[in-house]
Amino acid sequence: MAKEKTGFKPAPADARRFAEALLGWNRDANDRQMPWKGETDPYRIWLSEVILQQTRVEVGRAYYERFLAAFPTVQQLAAAPEQAVFKLWEGLGYYSRCRNLIAAARSIVSDHGGRFPSDYPSILALKGVGPYTAAAIASFAFNLPHAVLDGNVYRVLSRIFAIDTAIDSTEGRKGFATLAQALLPTSEAGTYNQAIMDFGATICKPVPACDACFFNRHCAAFLAGRQTLLPVKGEKAPVRVRWFHYIILQAGNRVAIRQRTSRDIWQSLYEPLLLEAPKTLSKTTLLQHIGAEYGLTIDPSGVLSSTASRTQKLSHQLIHFSFLHALLDEPHPIAGFEWVSTEELTQYPFPRTLQDFLGKNLV
Ligand code: SF4
Image: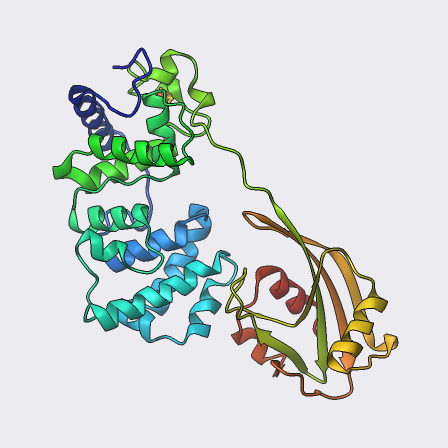
């Protein structure tokens, strides 16, 4: 195959040869182990796929096992209080995935009689389920002929066929989807899909092990010495920089918190009083803000700590944090906030950086 660039349309013989070679390697030499591998229960496959998106396997494994222990069935997940699900998700990030997980579980119960849908369009229609996850569930659970296309598969295909089209462009997404589907042996969809992802994770890695690769005599990128230049990615979206000034108000053993409800990062999680500003603010400015906005006068001697040393990088945002921890005589009512005891705080889900600060600094 492929001494020259082949584009998105492999000859049928090439597609067959690639699929056969991959399935042979999978049978004889693929020893990648994961707890969800070989799983045919669509609920478990879905759970593992949602947890693993943007998450390293070692981290995701522990979350997957905790979720399964807490919610062994989709019905139990659907019936769980939202706060309990978010609490289990805490630390994984990408909280919209958790919100979608809950919504999809509830729709499986309300719209599908509690049975996981078994056809591709219905799986794809579930909240938060995109083409990759739908293809994974459809092929692993029901052996339906839908090709998966994740980062591993993009990398493998772009190299084997020496495709320079950016994988995150509209043309690239469309072209790679067509190519992946053309290569899929429909009778062994689930096995093939798992095999190509394993191949990308263990051999055709970002730094590929070409010398050990069973396909190197046919790989267009390897033959041209271009394997580390592929896949091509487009321009990165600019990073949004934000300053979050948290004011932790504590009265006795109670702390003022509220739920984040706007369509922003960490929606549905909890937080103390927040002042977001386009730059860092001084302690004096923060105390003035509390006075002007909430009518609270805080004696500077009641400020336990004021730190501005943390940052957290999200996929397209960089958050700078400062924390001002102030003691009040009593829990003054503040619109939108509840006063929660320090013991009860452990029941509430917080963004990771806040969780760290509260865990270490509350008195
Ligand atoms: S030869 Fe190298 S670049 Fe080509 S498929 Fe194998 S590991 Fe990937």
